[in-house]
Image 1 (tube, rainbow, N blue to C red):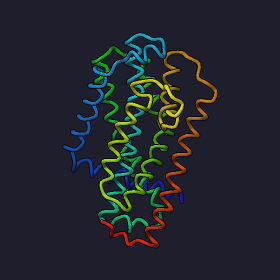
Image 2 (tube, one colour):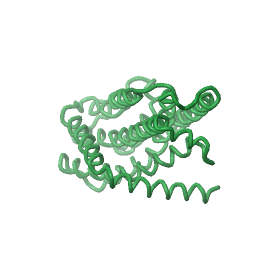
Image 3 (cartoon, one colour):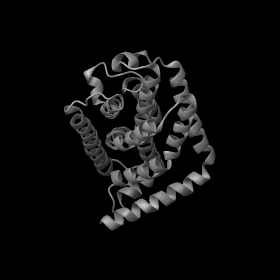
Length: 262
């Protein structure tokens, strides 16, 4: 089984590379949009909230914002790709074939999402270059960028779970792309990215606690003992909820639907 999974991963990476070669304009446009969003937020979003909350300078607050933006970037890419893949596959009829394959549909979505996220690391490199020109950074900041990428893995899985929840709607309804865009925008402002956590309910956002952990380490603040556990638990709950409800929705569609809603 493991060998089959690794073979599947290799196939999806090759497929993603071929797809990206055929959609160079789409890659460039994604890079431009994401970079432009970062630059606009960098200049026009006030850093006073982060400065006051962590007791740091404006320069340090900009670094804290950048670390948070990386978590948001990875998380929203996972959410967007997962939900759009399910929607597109359901609309084109591919989802019915995937159901009949020897692999669980969520595993197929996860593998394709992971392959595309690996290829999207070029966006992270571009953001680091842009941030270098916008603000002086050192090897310390580069190290924390790598740490943020590593610690974002649980949040990516949690956002994948939310993507599966949106995918439940995709099985019956069109136009879920608008739902995804709204979620991405809301999470940018409430997910501990440009402003700190002010309300306990924000801890339910998949990447909020991960951002808090990295920021605390960067400014030399102690990390609360419960925070890493909460970070893992929140994302495990989102992932579990997504897998369970998507499985139920897919089963209901197989029994009572015809996969021809579109």
